[in-house]
Each structure stands twice: as C-alpha cells, then as structure tokens.
Image 1 (cartoon, rainbow, N blue to C red):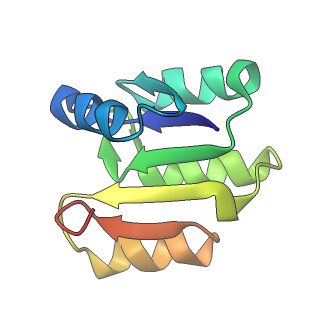
Image 2: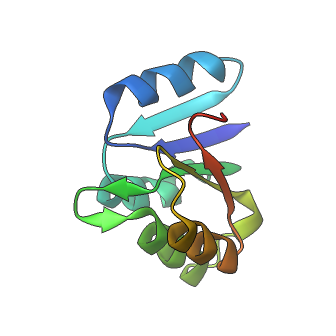
Length: 102
C-alpha cells in the first residue's frame, strides 16, 4: 500500500513511518509539498495532520477532493479534538482520528 503522510511534526512522521513500515510510506513536513507529491505517488491512503503551516488539514482534504481523490482514502489526525475541524473533515468524506487514540 502506498501512503502519503503530511505532518509538520517530525516525531509524528517518524512514528507513522515506523508503525506502517510494511507499507510504502512517504512523509512530508507540509501540505504544499504533500499536494505536489500526490500526483507522483498516487497514494492508496493520505494521512493529513489537522494543522500545518500555510494550509490546514481541512484545506488539504478539500484540495484533494477537488482533484478527484476519493475522500474515503483520507485520514485526518489531530492532536486535539476540535469538533468544528472534525465536522469539516467528515463533511468532506474523510475519517477523523485524535492522535491520542491512534
């Protein structure tokens, strides 16, 4: 499985890569780079942090959906349970998970 993980925290990028080491995981530190890499990687799953410099996770999800990427293949991870962010992500069709629960 090809996975693209976007998170500005290097510790979370490392952890996700270790947990999903049986898969082909590409981790990037910001949303702009992640959106650029989607076309090259053609990931089966995109994992998005809820808050990143320059672009929120909800904005990333909206951009992916606008490009035709299936929202059921998008997982948003958040350090905090923000019901507004969760509602926006799930309204776009993504799955939302608090990092403490991950």
